[in-house]
Image (tube, rainbow, N blue to C red):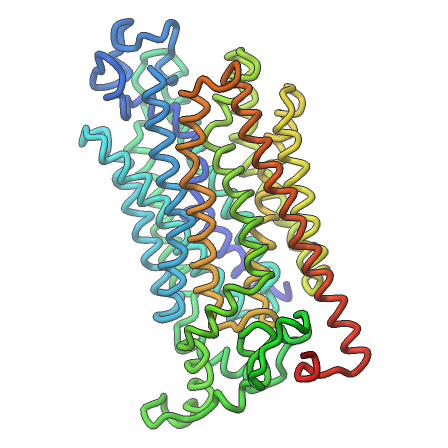
Length: 524
């Protein structure tokens, strides 16, 4: 970062994403508060209006505290509510990608911020409303808001190209660090009760959520004002197209994948050789001063066939396999970790201690990892094979630790989860936004459709996996079923090693071709 203005921009990105971005990923920290509030207790026999009115008849689990589940049915409902919210947190990126590409990052960010504010309002009012749909709507809105806030802020990397790597790393770290928001809700809520069973809190959920709105509303307004408009984005992209172009995908692809078209890159993406043919002026284009260059960007953006070929390239598909598999692992980890630890060790204190460490280490570890991720992306930004190899190996190590049924390995997994997840998403966003691999006009849609695939494969199966663990009779115990689920996911991550191998192979081939003076057309 060059000056104080750069630091202010990065701080604004960090603050906006922290307050409204990946808040839903801390949903497990909110479970005790929701139990205390009596949310979704319909599935338990003899439900009363809140946990404060519980009796032995209402909550048949012997010794259950107000901050614990009344029955397995309630926990299943929480898992369903969480999986829906996590799905939209990933899948909504598709809509935001289209919105950002067609209307600009300000509209993208604005819609996300408004949904976030609406979610906190419903979270504050759900207990007063007294209906289960209010809790679902609150978590749905908070989940759906995050991608819009995140993607809008990510476009600041185009407005300030020298901060591209820093903004990618900081955005990814804040995306996970914002899970701390609901942990803060938890701490304030129970601190105000004096941690006494059955005592009503002095700082109620409406008070806490309302206070958070007083922070994120003005912060969101300031961030919205700092974002580039669609006209500015088009101008910056067109100016880049008219100048010196970065390395294009021609030089990274295998000869067998090269298209015959002279203005297309190796797998159908528009490359640097397309600028002359794309910059044809339409009579209905922008004003004369910008018509040719803006039309060049528009021609690429509206070419659905080019985008589809970009999306179906081998490197993109391998990346999505890794992200989907590890996202399923991560989402299952987030929503069931406390129950899994209890099933493994059958000890409430151990489960409570390790899950508390996880709830704190997840966002804090992600935040602290932003520095490491920034250094890695700055130093290895042109070597996608190396930083993707690092990410896949880290994911494998974490998954292996979680697979082992020992307290020490579960504790290590809880501590490492945040850093690995931050590094994973930071490298993912950096990879998809590299101009040498993908035309900038496709970045929004690549993130959108990519995250939709990740959401379908990585979030939808959570409820099925949880139902298998809780309700199935296969194997001897729930602990054995947890191990079986993680073993299958581990095999999927092993297959993801094909991604860095393929990237290294294509990079090596491109280096040979450059040394031999082979042009993209001769690479057939």
